[in-house]
Image (cartoon, rainbow, N blue to C red; front, side):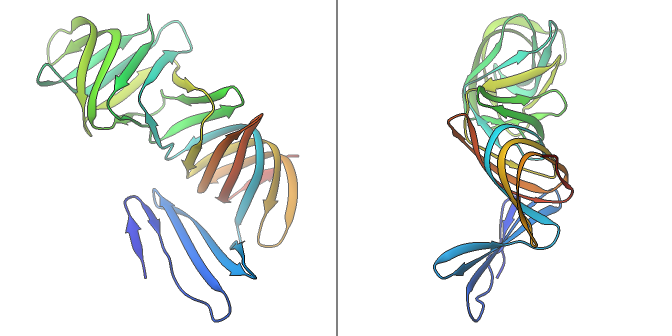
Length: 252
């Protein structure tokens, strides 16, 4: 039996003669990570196919180029790492018409209300001090809702942009955020769910299990390839559970 939910597919299949087995298939952009779990003597055991690895442990730091970095709930603030940065929200609705909102670095671009930002493709770093999403390399979509910003912006719809000190705007699936100048969103430590394909770098204390062996590691590099990573903040870092398929380098 096969059931598909949105862009992420899960397959729940068959009952083996001796043990209960479940195959889970998670797909992003045509690439998939396959996991099979089998209940043996009351314990759930993950069965890994060749070329795939399970990583568990605690990370002091993570850097990921993810195909799907998940949704970032509102409120959030966009800042820039350098002296000059820009952001535009194309397809926003302000004053009853579809328009573009422009922001130039000068004060942080804080967004409240609404639902949040569908980050999509993003570079993500996580350390004990917090999580940072770099925004420049890709466009990001606002989730539908009514938002507000207190920043000084300019609003234009096919003509000269009109300056505004703060603005209410409605966003939908056509509202696209584009940034430059090293723009990022930084927040305190929080749980993350990241999907590949992409690349990963992990530093911490890990157990790496493949179909043939298990070993300890403190410095891992992966990619490019499919991955499914879950992080949960704990004291001094993050508890990590990951499945990867592709080139995995155990550096230490």
